[in-house]
Length: 140
Length: 120
Image (tube, rainbow over all chains, first blue to last red; front, top):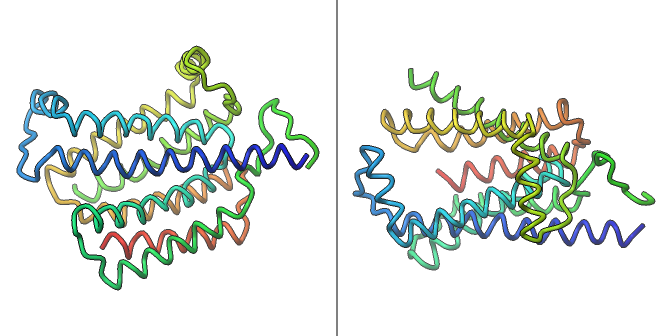
């Protein structure tokens, strides 16, 4: 049933976007909150770091990242989710360029193009190639 | 010692993510995202052996990572993520019985090469 495939694809793209965005921004906010000079020696230092607002926000986003990724796993293949969510590396590089003025070398641009090509290749395939447990897949 | 920790971390992350994927598949597609339904899902996952195993494996990888960080810097992180991605794709085909065709292999290879170039 075409609408079932469409529904699954839409859901997959939505959750992929959530996974990628929460990972990229979660990492970004953590970096913002934790200066390179931060000394995280004992457990108390970690607890203290959590009270830093950017770090706390980063942690929340990373939790969202994990939860949404697990949701994706409930209907999509691991071999689909892994490459497709790697578009996050591209997003991280772009965030670094826009917000932190980090330069993107030709080698990094080449890497970005390769990632995008790989994501497009895998993304075009069906997210799920395994019959679900008890879930009807409709007319295939 | 460093290489042992690195190998341990790579294996633990791979095992953790494959177990998570297997556990979530067993649970079945999550369709209801209201807070009450999410609570029920979390309850079910807490009893799911694969999820428990996956979380344990991720915990092991986290400690290996912390130990590694105290001994070295982040330069190893790039080949580590490339190796885990490759191993997980192989395990997805043979353990999770996913249909990993030529196109998916090619896509994964492109992504792995791209990630290495981007991270160096």
